[in-house]
Image (cartoon, rainbow, N blue to C red; front, side, top):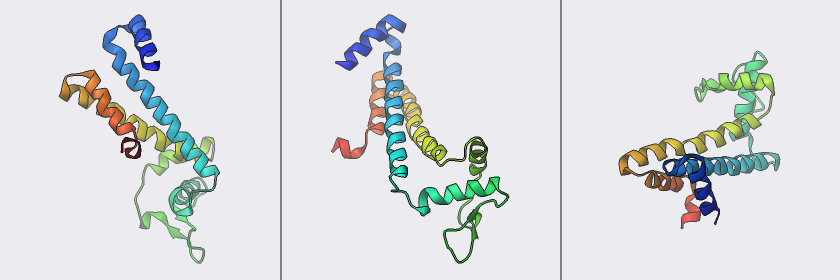
Length: 150
């Protein structure tokens, strides 16, 4: 029913050729919202550990406080995070932390990256199958979790 309403609205606004693109944008926005709220409630429900979100939070916090990439997950000695992994993108997050020091930046970035990946899949599917509908279905296969498909 909702899809039919979107289809009618699409014809009035921009013609038939953009219907599947608009559906793709809606699907990406829904996917982003779901992933963001899952990540947000997971973090604020204390279901994250120091080994996933905490290490990156400490590394970025250290960049702003003149202790770049220092991790204190081992209480007996602080270690430099660059000894494990090289993540230059953390410097971009330090600019965001300067605005507001919050791990929510990581949650937003993760949800955004995973959701926006559907757009190139849509474009590739459209080009390979010569159909926007097929491209939308390929991208939808990416966006829908495997546990829902089984």
